[in-house]
Image (tube, rainbow, N blue to C red):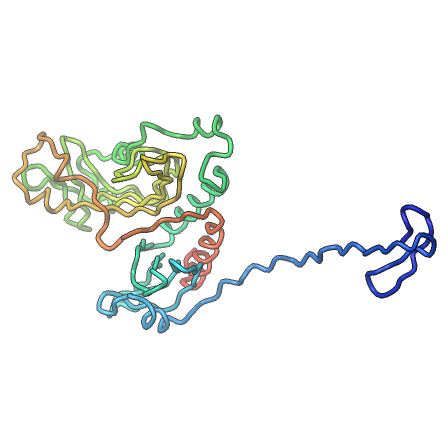
Length: 318
């Protein structure tokens, strides 16, 4: 190291401090910051007993086998937990759960029933990762607009994917018969039901045939749905991840996991005649217990995917 003024070699007085033998000026060596490799915390499984004793999971409804704490801060804890219903230890599912940190009380959840639904959810999350920035705005707004299907309606999509001829069961191929005021078809072989609303059949979209596309038609209350992806759609159950915003501050966006259902038995048992307006009786409502499932940090999505993948492997799902 040389003196910039005298061009003479500096004399080291002690580590990090040097002096020019001619002008007597002192020089401190610049310390290069030591760049340590960022170590990502390995997501590890926590025994189910911990979740049963430290969270508000109710034993009379479900039991936790094991789970992964994805993130925990002063307000919330997010975890992916493998659970089963009491008495049905082989019938396992994944519960993506939000808890309040202060009390570990239940804040919100979604239930993932099978590997096809899980695959769709992971793929949908990867789409969000690729197309949006940290503030949940499209990375390329112009190109992204072309990806949105503004006319997407799941009921119509189901009829495009599977053609029901009014006779053959879509599940087992058996013969279906119309029941009670022509409100639904029933298969006497497998029990499959197809509901008829205003003359149109409504039936489940098989999860492996559901197209993961961006849409804006979602039954969201209080907030404005900017765009979202449906990853499960059955006649009485609908799940999607939706980027939403507050009407008073539309620039502030975040991701929310939605889970809706509707009571088709009420429709079948009711005296509403075919062809009348069914907006209220068939409306989608937030699933009881689904609560608040907001995700404000896009950076957590890879950790969620990682935890879900680990749970998938534990369950030997494909």
